[in-house]
Image 1 (tube, rainbow, N blue to C red):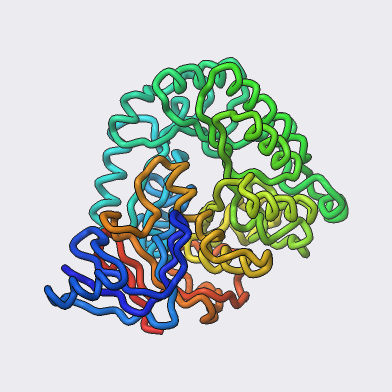
Image 2 (spheres, one colour):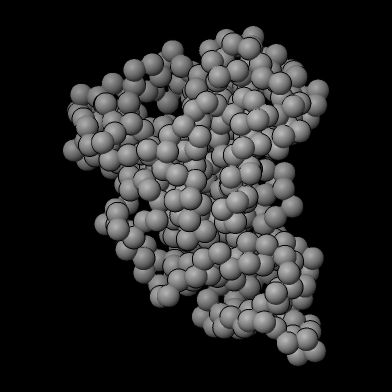
Length: 430
């Protein structure tokens, strides 16, 4: 199938391109841009023409953390519902954490997930394998076998790994084979029992706190182990100003580290807990306004490589409880693009630079050849209206999880088309 996209503002963060033009897709790949696209479409008529006048044509978003809830948690969400949510949000590739039930610690489970995801014919799914058996932090998984089955990295997700020697051995093994390790930096002992940032708001509300140094102490340990082993480390969902500074120094030192931040933490702080709003019960917790501002600045200057949705659908019953008992997590696949656009507008950043944090930069961290617009590249594309308003409500979210701190907000950035491998997988009638 040949698709000609005309008159769109083509934004390619990988090359810095940002100008109006035409784009021709043939089969699964982009084959031509601008005048060449016009000439080739005339010589061999396109099967479909999409007029993108007034719209942005960008690489499909690449999300580094989206829980699809299968296998094991189908009562929270299904693969079908979350894949539909992904493409509705312009997400064409996503990494799936290993904290399913059972965890992704055996090749058979990874194969099953990949087959079921492929059968959905929606976004591309890249499994993150479990670093330890059953995510218990005791015995290492067979990483080589998991890599052969399709795992692109290894992680504990949100499960603690308290035994530093096990972590050391894991990084040594991963370094030997060149496997990336993705870790959240949190000292489990210091965070134990906490549900909110250890600050004035938690004190006023009577909530047990998690101190910022629970993150920086754990991050310091991780960075020391990277210095020792040379392993490639990706630090997931940093939340504090101290972590931003530690990672800035690590990058100046040329350590093989990267990091990301959840999109909710770019916009919200502990002040948004209000009167125990369980939609703001997140892991890591929403931090102080100072921490939030440091995250925003670090994302803008490149210290933080990527922003992700940290999509975690939760059933209503698990959220309609007292704050401290509510299950942590927020849905985010459909909000990633408008929240990135809002951050870019508030920080006065060029669109290409902002989109890089969810396209080309994410592709680099994930180790995949996606996230760019060029002849020969995969035709994974999102076409969106950057100014059209999008009102967030439980009724408009396609995800089975309706748990979002942004319910009731009106955000700019409406996806009109999503293409994966040249095939339209989402179209909006708006």
